[in-house]
Image (tube, rainbow, N blue to C red):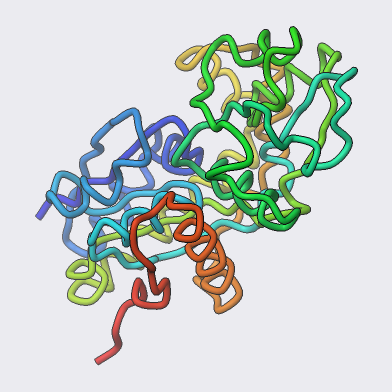
Length: 287
């Protein structure tokens, strides 16, 4: 059997795993081979798992919640350590906004459906505001930084090398540090049948993830050059961003599940998902 791992640019561990031999080696030890399926939008991970196009994937915190809300029977396999400086909610340096409450009535650019939605929705909820009604959330793009600096946006969520470049260039200010609102973990998940019938496969994949993380932590400049060549951006900014990541895989904890449940509750209140989700359902049942 071939185990297919989903890969997209926004999950750094899987991105580097797909360029190393670790998954093939660990899966061979349990009698399996590996293939990688590249796609562009991590929000689709739950759908791809259900359709059988991939057997294992990873995203930020929001896509597993929206996958459950869409009826996909996913199971959490592991999470990264918290990534407090992976991203930030930025405003222009001369913006009058001093708190999240000051964003009411403005337009915010973010990667809708990604962990960034969790950040913005939770920050607004903590301030007594609603993601659905108190801001205009728009999908960010290549012009987001320019629009922020021009005053056309209230705020922009930047991450990775974009965040490093924006802070290096100046003219922007961190309004919300991600780690002050959510833990912002990478989240790895699979189909229930894989998690419950093939736990040795999941264990092999987690060993591979840990090896990929160890490689990235030990080779930040090489990893930065790979990403810059493939995804664009400067090597120095990529290295800054990669050095800010924890490169450590953890078990799924009660604390993580509680944070995910809190996100799901905020999402349903704002209409981002259409029905309530019980996050604890996305855990493997033990025989």
